Length: 256
Image (cartoon, rainbow, N blue to C red; front, top):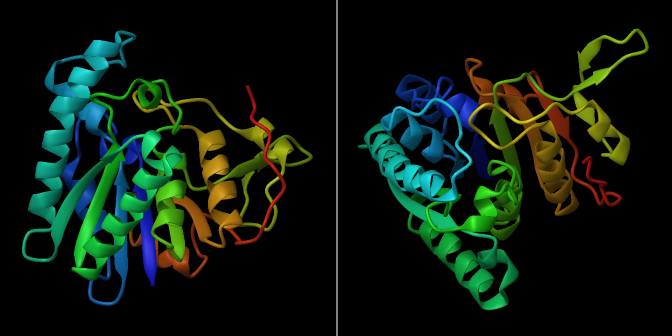
C-alpha cells in the first residue's frame, strides 16, 4: 500500500525545537519493506525560529521566510540521519501553484511516482522561504497540502499526525468525546473545531478540510496523536484516532 503521513509542527517541534526522538519514533514505525511512504512534514519555521531565539510566530513576512530557510535545512538533515541505512530520501518544496497549473501538476505527479519507483522516500513541505500565500495559511499547516499530495500520489491512506487523539465532538451533556469513525463530514462539524497552535497554522478545521478532500478522492484518512506509541499500526487497526471512510461527500463549509 501507499501511505502519505503528515507530521504536524506540534509533533515535530512541541516546544519550538525539533524533537529528534519523537521523529525517530515515527520513522521506526514505517514498514519500509512492505509499503511505500510519502512524508509531508511541518516544522521548518518553528525550527528556524528556535535557532534565532524567537519564541512565538512573528508577523513580519521576511522574518518568517528567513526562519523557514534556516529551519528547512535543519529539518532535512535530521530526516537524513534518521533514515540513514534504511532509505534514500528526497526533498520536495511545493506551493499552491504546483497544483493550480496543469503542466506543473503533471510534473509533480511524474516526479512523485518516479521517486517511489526508485524506492526513494519523498519528504514534502511548503516552499515557505519564498511563498507568500502559503505563509498566510492557504494550506493550513500542511494539512490540506497533504490531501493534495495524497491525491497526486494516488495514495491508499492519508494519516494526519498531531498532538490530539482525534476529532472530538460535544455530547448532549457538553462533554468532549472522541469520534472513532466518521462516515460523512458535514459543515456543522467545524463548529466543534479548535483554533491554531502556538507555532503552527493548522487546527482541527484544516484537518477536516483535508479529510474531506482526501476521502472524496477515495482515500482512507485518519487523524491521530503522533506521540502515541505504535500509532501508525494502531490507526490501521482502527484502535487509535478518528477514521474517515472514503466516499464522495458534500461541499464542506469553512468556519470563519
